[in-house]
Length: 376
Length: 157
Image: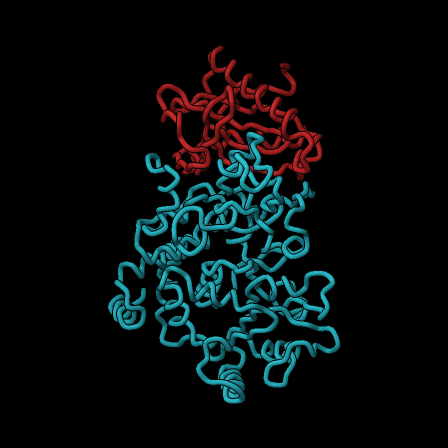
């Protein structure tokens, strides 16, 4: 058992949080990832550990949207948690220093933490013409990726670009943009696709690594199963309209205004695996995801769909693989600690429409807003 | 043991099947997400705490459904897409409120959709019959002898 007073002091000093809220967060995180009982204590211990893992964060062909969405999350604690539980030794967007000074810092951090640091890559890697289309400090993205991956304990590709090439790889893909897994063949890479990806999915992955020293279980595309095992369509708030055959036929028509299914406008929900409808974005309550605001899903988490298939093109009845995750039997519910919002990640197990939302006072809105209180 | 359904309840289930069969013919048939190898079938319906509960298989979804009764929450006027958490013997299940003409409002919980993974109706039907019983069992409990009321494929309409 860990020393509780020690943890309380750590939490108060570093996270500026109430101990109770912090432990609630840990419990919610554990639920999120479908971890067994007792894992929350392990998570609490890992997150308050003195030694924070060194993280090297590389940016290549991207828009910095992944970093932006994480740091601008409505929930102020996410950024704080991320920056407090890891030691960010190199991040081009967040570093105050510049130029060769930063590159030197990166090399020093790698040397000091060789074999132990976490490498996060944001953005695609161009491989055409020996990768000359993206350079940082005179080195190509290709060189940097290989160099930094060599001493990394874990590699996380954040965003669709790093996951398989994403937007920069849109045909005709002039620079030969490629994802991290294709470059680092033979090295396990966890991908967190999305444009932007949900910060909670990234945070859960990091917490899993901190706690267990290993990355979470992933599917055949390297995506954590806890977040990408169910189709958007299966958790969609417009699903009842699909079942009943009610569709919006064009933007702004009656069906669109009534919240009907967006399939005929090109929604890729039926062929895209992600937990967006269950955990939503930015903790602002119901509807805060593309389909919730009336736009069809573009399939940004799915290689071969997002940035490949036109936005208006219809989803197809492919021979879907059987779902990686079946509906969870008992959905976890937490009580409303504001920090628990983060834990919405919970929804992960899939099915849990709104289960995540239940974990959090703040996010509770997403269910209440949809009139679900009574039996909730 | 699942009690046999009353004639009135059986009529409701038959209507559920015919309404969704009609929706299939009129609105879904031409869509890419419609699996023409499948049919509409009601699987394992029974009375459970006032709800009429079972699985509905269609060429475009397989849902666990609860149709309201006089003693359950009256779903009239509830916005489709609203959510409900119901404690079934199996555990807590999250449902979405749906509504179709004639049948009225109901609760549904997605098991599969789209249905591309089933190459024939027998496969989908078998999956549904196997899935329905456990919703009414505590984890570890022995399967019940009654399997509920089915309608749609082998019995008419």
